Length: 239
Image (cartoon, rainbow, N blue to C red; front, top):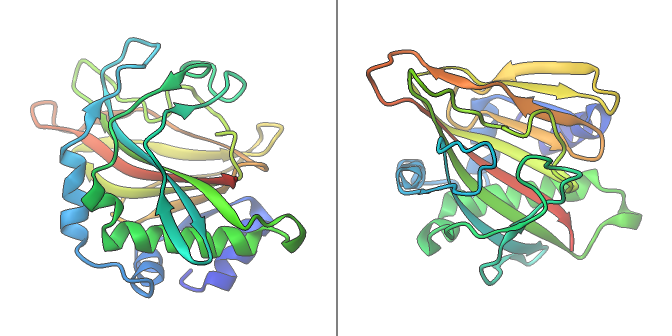
């Protein structure tokens, strides 16, 4: 699905879209995507998430907030990430200060292309009467690590909503991992679809008001080799 109009139509109708890597590459290259290798390599320099209430040390991340409108994206001063316990019963209810996304990655053409695509898609999916002039966007670089003695949990809070309006989950890299199946459920928690993000740039677009989403734990294929799953999560909500 390389057509923005077709993507927005499907997202509005179904509450989610599973977009292939070639479709996402086309969508993003028209908005300036270049130098993917340097962008994806930045996932090798993430800090450990020390807020995990399950005691796990399998998640690394960096974080940034932006204001996004029709004139582009402007980075906001560094701030904590907050979710109420209504949306994140495991780690919610506190202000979580994560290491910031590095300036050169926040300004990278790949990141700017991703924000531009999100703005176009999410704005078109929002009825004109309720469209904001600017969106509050939050960007999360995640690495979920796994070993023979440690499952990596991409969504340790389980099946959930994020408490925003829209979500993009973009795969950056899968290295020596099995599983990591994304599941989408309606508001009654009936299964609507499932898939594995397997190739770099493959993505899930989600209407957070209409569906729940979750990802099953990942395990190493070769227990003696490094194993991890890298994603970029972008959320948009009204300012």
